[in-house]
Length: 86
Image 1: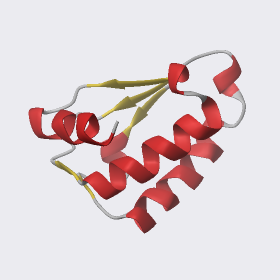
Image 2 (image 1 turned 60 degrees about the vertical axis):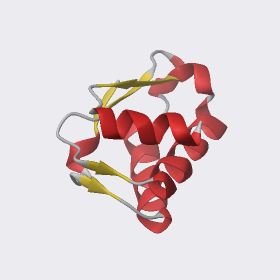
Image 3 (image 1 turned 30 degrees about the horizontal axis):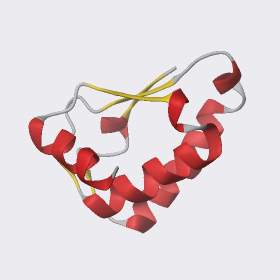
Image 4 (image 1 turned 45 degrees about the horizontal axis):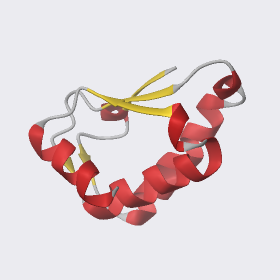
């Protein structure tokens, strides 16, 4: 399952916003994680703050396992943020 993160916004910032995104993602995923990985596509995301990345990735990994979460199409800045919080 591929999730277009830019549909949430092109500027992803703040823990409260990440918590809201996680709740929405749970509804979208709704059991299909058993069959396939969750791929977060960051194409067109301009800004990803460490607080947002930390909140969202930890919640997803805690619920579904880090082996199920894949990340694609990151800019250099977004990738650096993700690497910093892992």
